[in-house]
Amino acid sequence: MTAFLSLPEAIAQYVHDGDTVALEGFTHLISFAAGHEIIRQKKSNLTLVRMTPDLIYDQLIGMGCARKLIFSWGGNPGVGSLHQLRDAVEHSWPRPLELEEHSHAAMAHAYAAGAAGLPCAIFRGYAGSDLVGKHSNIRFIECPFTGERLAAVPAIRPDVGIIHAQRADRKGNILIEGIVGVQKEVVLAATLAVVTVEEITDELHAPSPNAVVLPYWTVSAVVLAPEGARPSYAHGYYGRDNAFYTAWDTIARDRESFLSWMREHVLGDRK
Amino acid sequence: MASEPVATTTYTAAEMMIIAASRSLRNDDICFVGIGAPSAACNLARLTHAPDITLIYESGTIGTKPDILPLSIGDPELCETAITTVSVPEMFQYWLQGGRISVGFLGGAQIDRFSNINSTVIGDYAHPTVRLPGAGGAPEIASCCQQIYVIMRQNRRSFVPQVDFITSFGHGTGGDARQRLGLRTAGPSLIVTDLCLMRPDSESKELIVVAIHPGVTREQIMEATGWPIRFADHVEQTPPPTDGELTILRELQTRTAQAHSDEKRDHS
Image (tube, rainbow over all chains, first blue to last red; front, side, top):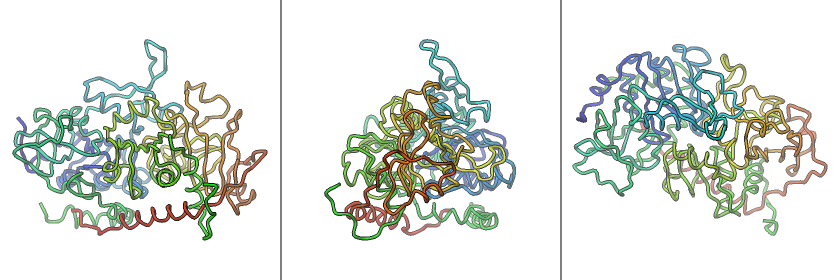
């Protein structure tokens, strides 16, 4: 059965030090509330997986929760660098960060392979790129039918997948709308899946028979977390706060201003 | 475009670059749009001479018609104005890998004489001087789209003899390097900068200047290029921006700036 938990309960129960955790959300429905709870509970030694680390991984990395990052684009979209990520890579602050770097195509295929229960993903990619050889998880195979050389990457199978979604019904069925990214794939690929939602309603009211719905039996826990994606957005609920994304560039550029922002806005005395 | 009046007001080199880039797109293009300058150029094309162009962003939005320029590749505006929005695996599997895209429009931090693009690191990979955001969709955009246009400001730090890191393969070491890798697409075929337009030489694939923007000299271009840049036998002059192009671009940028600076909230 799907558990309905508070955010602190869900993170305490499902996320453990040393886990491989994927908080997804491709520039939409980013799990900021869940990420902040991971920071408050001082989880450590995590291998963080995410196509676009975004500000939430900048915060997790800057607060020392991560030992490794598997990613494909580590910037502040349209603004510039993720300064805490850069500080970790360039100066090992607050701790060294191992990188396993991919392209979007590779990670998208790897999530799909994870959802499909396959050991690896095969695709046409990485031709001529220097990303090849930077770690052992980009390899090539020959198509047994045509002989074409194709790229292969291992399936992504996180210990815990965490996503934010618009709503759940009281059984725990989940509705996702708008830019759906890899939300479905990460839930199906993960051993355990936690979904934070804007609201829980009696009926799901999926707008179309083809809506993106995750049946309750694919989800370990549902957490009510209104506005849990801010400053990212939830299609149909609130917009993306682009001004904050821009402001983050200044906040995160300096260690002291970063820590002071985190103390005030995330650690604070809120629960 | 040719019949429109030439701009009576002054314009910046950045505006010239975006306008020149927008002119390269056709009404029937299916265009995979990178964020930043490519996005501005592609939407300007849609708002001027190419109203039916299909713009696709890697977030899965197909046929999007944003009224303001998105800050990220996944702004709500893109999804709300798209014909359809597909998942990210579907975007990369079917639409990009499937060979459906006529033009991929990319930017980057560094480009070299054979149009290889670096958006990963400056310096050594293990100990970078500058850690850049990384590949994103670019490596497979560069290999799967029928051709690639690149838009980048030109200076000696960005136009280098050899990139520090090949994120996206252009023409490798030149000649038939793409064919030798098994690539069947054309790769980079046009580079638009704030000074000029370049295209790869048909044989060697080395970039050569084919058009120079108004008021720019050959010396400026040589000064801003990290290798001895060559010029085509017949170098054209880029037509200056028209009043129409400038007005539409500036209105787009004003709307965008306004929308993105709306009230900041407390995100705790």
